[in-house]
Length: 203
Length: 291
Image (cartoon, rainbow over all chains, first blue to last red; front, side, top):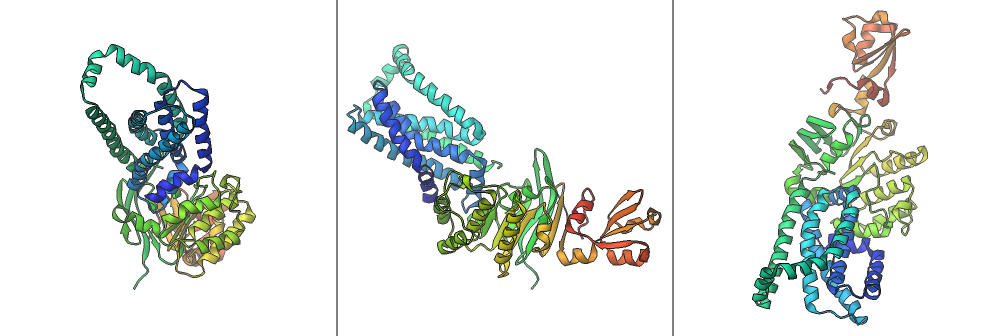
């Protein structure tokens, strides 16, 4: 398991430099971007890249010819995504702190929650889609997320007053816990679905 | 004790979009080199994938080392070295990094052995795999397959797309590897001349069906290409042949009982040893000759 997770780092050694420059770029040239989005992009970066590499038929043939089970390959993907999310967000936090870009723990928590939800939907799709489409789907997904996130939040605030009232009525702890529970619940369901798909995949 | 089978397929069926394997039985004997031959699209790669558990059969059983994949996948794959017809390693990585990814996967990885093969094959460690020539990619793949003390080496068209010099070089390497006699090798190819030097057994597949599985010496003894005048052919003599090709100048036919043909036709026909290529050519489209 550890070997499979470590493999992504070996493959992406050079992309990690790009990763840090991407965050610095966002800090300088996208000043008004929400720190949540920066954390989300940072947290998803390694896993999204890993999917591009492992989406290729050849990589699947390699991994499945080595002494790994399909179950383990999927498990390492889901656990690895969590590990890399934590490491990347910590790194992004450090970079933002160095450049004096304001954020708080709430931003990180929301980004982590959004990452789990995003991953929960994206990962099984990646196991179904042909590798050639993954780039396109990811690109569109990122754009939709980037454009849609803030308006959607505003829309929710303005028009769904009852929901916001209900949410506002909950205690902060309660809100955090239920949000986390939903995000992690979706992630776990997604894991089971991915495993089901991957077991039946033909290379 | 008889010969043990390293690989056994029992009644395996698999339906793919363009291709079907129906109720296949296959045994690969331990300690020998088995050549797996057939035309492009005959089902070699599908069978190899079934053996590697990259594909799961719709019905029937696949066992390797007497174990099944459902409960012993890791153990089986720890004991297999694989070489595929095209590069499966992350092509942007160099061989050193690929070694770093593959090595910890195997219980018996031997870094010294790997280094020795890398030196022997003169492979660069710091160049990305995609910049390797086809021959170098194959050698890299072989170096990895041989560096974890695998008992079974599975090679799917390892010589495909190589120039004659590289092919020759690779075959020399295989021969060297097989010297110790402990290893079992299953080697698929459509270039049959590759096998005449190294194989002990030949399995011929056509349209997803195993046409025969025989020791090489038996093929050489029993199979022959027979040439003669078409006047010799009638309903009594034709059954001696597997397939007959007629032309205005006479007939060419393949027999699997050269001795009998000699007895029946005597000096009226020319009997020549059949090469694997000729056997493959004549057998294409005929029914199962497995016996």
